[in-house]
Image (cartoon, rainbow, N blue to C red; front, top):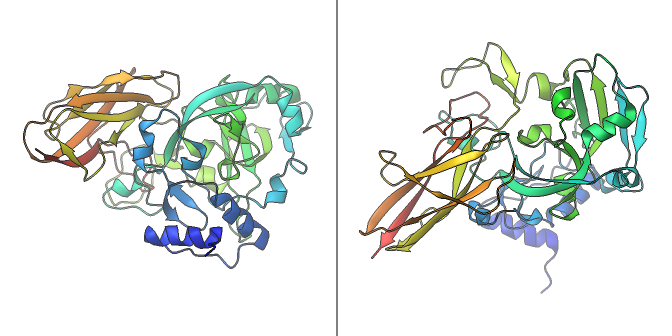
Length: 392
């Protein structure tokens, strides 16, 4: 019996306890494009079916680079119709406070100096499901993050072609994706000009040495190394240089953090600031939750990152944080990428054990036991924990 891709995907979702729900209001071309794009993804944990939001099982993070088809997927509206981002039709427009507006094709960009940056990309809500009390939004657990090599051109080189004017302070991005209802605001975000002009901020057209997949922003996306993914606009078509930060909903209301602590469960009523840099964080990739292991030696391994700062230490506890043992940092060491780590554990008794980990960066910032609560559930970086059973 021949099973269509759609049927196979539906069966996979059902096995995960998720139904395949098709939004009847989504334009036919866009729905077909998203369904085709989803076939590119690998073994992901689906959190939302439309638009397709899915996270990577943490067991996949034992490799330094996260393969494209296993990289988490996040968008507000789903990818645009394929024809909107085809190389024949696509153009990047640069305007605003520049000496002259410019349009670039992919051919134009590929003729500029290419650079490759290895960087973690992480959804701001990664870990949202662990906040107590619970907060609304996609209930990401641990896998809305990945580490990849991004190849493209420096944003400052593109802006240099257009010649930024005096008085410019921010750079706004807009992608080709569109909400299904006209009253829903566009996903428009901006970053400070200083970050835009940093030599490591790029416009990427390749991911892990291959053309950028549609689910990850093809043909072009922003990569702001060390910052959360809400600044890494996908399906990029518009860059506007301006004096002030974006006035859109996703800049002024969404993706913001209170500047003062908020009582858990309360509404934020004071001042807030845009979500920008990542915070120090680590995860356990092996052994896995509820796994049964034999008495020693057991390799505990994972990864740690801290946005724009270097991770200098990872520690592991097997007694609920009473004592900690330093893990060994291993593998490749690049700015903005995560650092792999390993600790060999020799359990000598049978039973159930909880493994905790925490990371410390060069600034002295260490993961807290739990993250400060905020109404949007952003920037969770509490100690990671995995329970295992030791069988003698």
